[in-house]
Image (tube, rainbow, N blue to C red; front, side):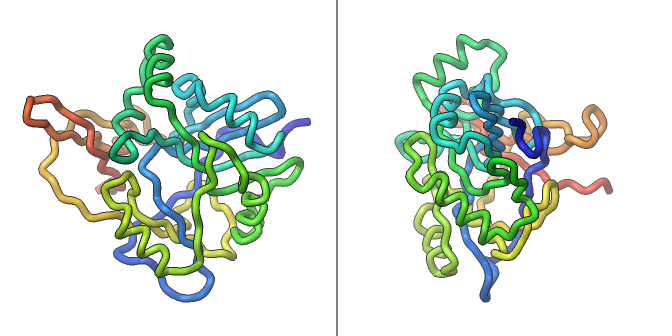
Length: 248
């Protein structure tokens, strides 16, 4: 039987805020420094889709078997692909995977295997869950993946703002990009900035090493800039992206 919907599906996005929202009805989650990825499992078939609606399977072959093992047989999950190193999550290691040579991707997958961190459930069986409230989707996700085995993980979540503030402070520098806040009664809104994110403030004079086209205007509109810094030996390292440009 087919899933209630298929790829491409735009992921729900977050708007930047200076501090975490307060009050009743919020759920807080860590914001991981990785590649956004929707996972579509239909029986023995798995499709990984990027934020830009592109397929990711070939770049992370080591995730196929674990995701087929852990995800419900017919489901769509929203999550993040990350690679952990000795000092924390390594975004640069993810960028190295986007390579045309399958042999190189296979080698990197063996040397630095990726993990998948799930944080939302969009479909289960015949049911499209996107119009269900987050509280219900989270409960179903916990039942589905609460006992998942590595490299598949369920992201931590808390309704306690103090816990979220502790995450924000304690894990800076270890790959946690900040904290995301979602309203418990909210539906899943593809392509909309319906969440709130608070990120660690960092300043640096960076080199613009490249760019990505905007998904709505490939070849005509820049979506993000790829930023880098030189080390003491003169090697340029990727350190992040700059996005959220206006058309002005």
